[in-house]
Amino acid sequence: MNVLALVGTKRKKGLTASLCNKILEGAEESGHDTEIIFLYEHRIEFCTGCWACAKEGQCVINDDFAGLYSKVKAADVIILGTPCYWGNVTAVMKAFFDRHTGFAMYNPPGADNFHTLTTGGKIKTLLKEKSNFGPLPDLKGKGFIFVVTMTDPALLAYTSGDLRGTVNALKTYMHNLKGKLLGKLVFTDTLFRFLKNKQKKMLDKAYRLGRDLKVLGGKR
Ligand SMILES: Cc1cc2nc3c(=O)[nH]c(=O)nc-3n(C[C@H](O)[C@H](O)[C@H](O)COP(=O)(O)O)c2cc1C
Image 1 (cartoon, rainbow, N blue to C red):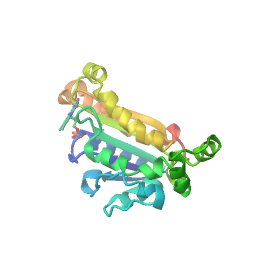
Image 2: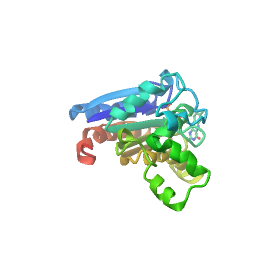
Image 3: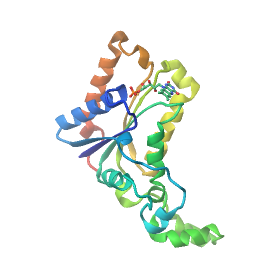
């Protein structure tokens, strides 16, 4: 399989990146093709909400998104790695998600009908149009692995909503692509990561997750 890690942190030697790299190491060991992309190394402009993507089938902003988007389309498994920043994914990851809107939520061939529909279509049209919603075929049905790291201790991470906010943002992307969750690594309390060998245990778990991908998911 084609396993792609999309990492939303500038710290290439940080915890999130290390965990993603370990998953890829395990995946390589099992014969999968792997690639890691640090989103911050690419120019990803904010979505302007123009909806040209839904009408034209491509985004009109001229930056690095198109190249990244083709990598996403070619992937069988996508690892989304992000530290929790203010109870959510990092800004670059959110900007990256936003740029998929026309491709993930709407099927461009029916774009004109969609606009008729918003000005008051009949129920019959509505049901017909419903089939146009959803991701484009190349985006559909990929396997996903989430990697989230955060300083909150576990109890606070779960009760404060910070972890939920972060994971929900990742889930929204996955659901819009009609993907399937293959695994999730959540590393809380990162300031104390060396206690009780926690970091090593987590890295070992990451490695196993990558190595056993076939068992978890299988080819689409
Ligand atoms: C701007 C910023 C916001 C953060 N917000 C949170 C937060 O809301 N909750 C939390 O538990 N940790 C938060 N953290 C801590 C990071 O999630 C944590 O240090 C993470 O492990 C860093 O991952 P990295 O080593 O891959 O950079 C924040 C850190 C930064 C720099």
